[in-house]
Image (cartoon, rainbow, N blue to C red):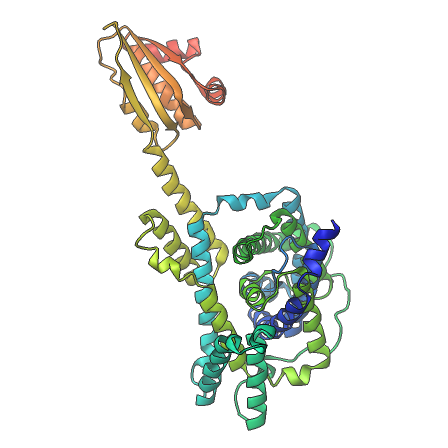
Length: 495
């Protein structure tokens, strides 16, 4: 226990603190932008980011992962805010947290194993594209100074790590922000800054229960939104946790992450913030800047609060070009460039799943829908592929009046028709043995197929013996099968 605590909090103090500062600077414009998307005051997103980052540092299951207000969640809030106002959004945020805690205790995090590598790759690529597209408004119809600063920022980000000594000590995104801010202020450039996005809060958030009536009507209003927020938040958080697992080559507790996200969202709702979840962009910034432990997320939240309250006037002068350069770096680093080369190597089905996930997310701007499409396609391709591995062989029998069929493989809804057509019902035999020792029946469709085969043979006056059925298949057949029920068999035969 003590060793785990030291590893998560004290093993990388300098790296975590510096990475947390970089993340805090990048969180500010994003939190403001997400607040605008949701139709609420900028302080709602900023308070949420501060609260969620600090809370998840203690309660989350993935050290080094950053959680805060996100665009995916903000998109789901728009209608609720327009129709019922901020207080109902805060109540929905609290209910979202409760639902996520329940999901954690139900161990729903284990369902991540149903998400294939192709879906994760598509998710990552789509998010990288969305991050890049989100920067375009800051690069369209602007002065040439914006382009020069953005290019200079990218140069600093990618070249500063090669500076002897300092390059390994200070995260290059932090250097980029500081240098470009100094240049912008020093030259008095008339370009867009963080202050142009909205007012920064200058007071601490206040604990306050949402001002809504505690009635069934209120529950009916907020429950659909809370269910959507809980699902999208957990999906994005668990996907991001999987990606950070790969980046750091360390495991994480997905069910604890579900509970942690829930606790963080309850806290955010009670402090006047909107619901949030893990952020892949900020998590990549954190990892790339040297953040590994829980201290980096805690530092991001604390620095965000300090920057808002005490350094607001300086923060307002940070040029958006500097943050655009950082986010472009995130986009480039997030995109799986090997997936382009792998299009030639990977199976067509895997490529279709990956590209469908990318296209759906980019078109809908909804990560949950994209992942759902990817998982659905992947499941269909898998079921179709497994179905082809089922075959029925005719085994030579010493007696011409008898015949043995050996079934090999998985029998379920995609292979049921193939199973039926493999038998010769017009063969002149008196006895048929169906050997299932190398087969498995998975669903009621497979059981119905077995019923059909047995019934057809019996109509031809052939005695059917079934041997070798494993216990799981036998349980399914006993429960849902009809051929072994004499009354039903007679009825079907007479019919």
